[in-house]
Image (cartoon, rainbow, N blue to C red; front, top):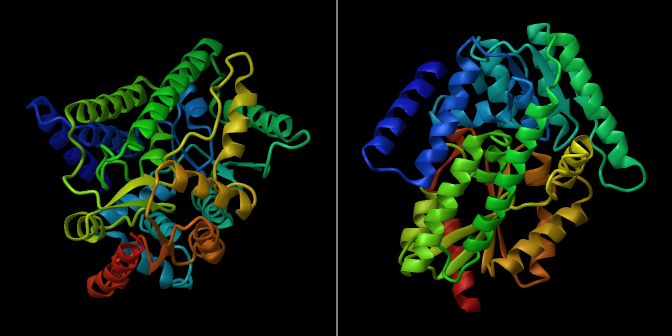
Length: 404
């Protein structure tokens, strides 16, 4: 099922691009499809990981790696997640737990998760994600290595985590027999740094007034691009976005004709098909110009201290550390992009999405940015009712209008 989906997706995108209908989003989506094919081909060495794993390091060792939530999101986008979520409910999983993780677990139960060669768990951004990795390791009877991500860079935390990454590399060598090639590793980090530099340009361009981006173009972008770091393909995707945004700004053309309100989207987007982004843009003139995870929070990787650089990168992500650090990051984005409001999809069962909503709302309110908290399951479309969300969006837009 999933292999067929990714094959058809790749074929359609490849033909569209070849026929002159290329766009940055299509080029990005093509790499998503190719990653899906590699995961499901049965011919690649696969590792299921936590979100903060060093995917460029794993790629340099010839491992196709991916965070498990990617599969939950893909199942949601195809409209198939409900069947797999139900499979977990039948064996006692709470319907209040994260549906990204229940969808992944259900896929494993039903034989839809490719068997990995090993697994890399991460203690950040959530304990639920680590629990899924542990369950998958038991399900497939494969070895697991857990990265304990420090909450900040104080004391000897960077050295501590860099040593863990070295131990992880030794673990992979023990499992697969593959030893890291220093030249391949340096090449991967060079590509990572090139991509990082271009991503910084993209986000800087997106701050323009009006912004050259549409609400859809950079959805889920920052978190998924991490899977492509270390490759030439990541550089190509980033260049396509940068060049298109430069072109639009030079031509005086933006993503959409209207930009009455500028919005910050907190955490991830809703993964199944829904009308929210179209409603915001077409009916209310409200454009999502920045997502929380579309930001560069780490310095270029020092090629003479690769493990130290990777450690700092993992520690730096906004979901790691205290909620005060995360709120500070959101406030920085809100000011830099001059947003009129923020939308927080409080994914059920998610401590990042729901647990911190009050503190995030208060923190943004202090700088004059109102927050719309949406009680929504971002993966399970069975609980979505368009009428209710339309009413909430209308009220939020009216409130922003009154502040103009």
